[in-house]
Length: 281
Image (cartoon, rainbow, N blue to C red):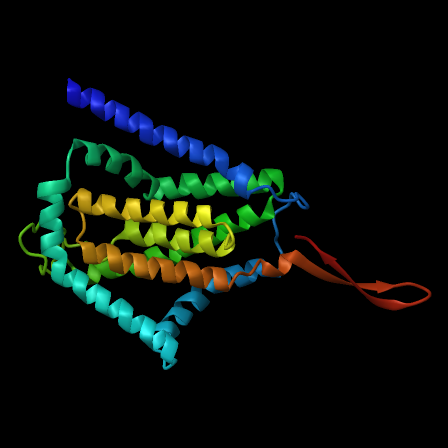
């Protein structure tokens, strides 16, 4: 009886916290001048579609690079990933034996849903609808870019059908069980999905430190639910997060909507000719 009551309280607290943060989100971050309530349907939408090819190609260039700064970054990522692979078994055993409880299961069940396919549709769809209805173009475009980042990441994530790594719940004592028809552990779709969205959100709101902390905390927490549920090894989460974040940042870098902030129009009359710059901030 006590466990059920405790479980209900945990769910209520976490649900309340999420509700409060969601309620405060528009007031803090979406207070933009509503200059245009229509969806943009111009050339930027063509650029948006081209990003499905341009972004993966750019990611390949980020991996196979000769720039010293990027080489150091890649070497650091490779080192951390190697360490994660080496510690997969011990991390899994420690979490399942010493950390996992009914409380972590309750928190996990709630957070996991926000990183699922259905959760992503609800969250990003709601943000897009909000931006479209109120004319806050920035949040609408952010939702559109985040959706693109998730789609690209999940397409790359199809590699899990090739690697065939068994999930820890199916191979609890062997973290190096690869090449199986039913193994879909590497890499984590939840982790890559939430980190791709996080990359877009943070790049689109670069000056809000509290927002960055909230987004990064959410992405980390959702990723950890997969260890708690014994669905992924730590390295699955790390690689998924690196791929997702890289895609998200790259999608934001190739933002096709950036030109919507300024429009140059020709001006002609009987006395002079020129151009007029219309800008919105």
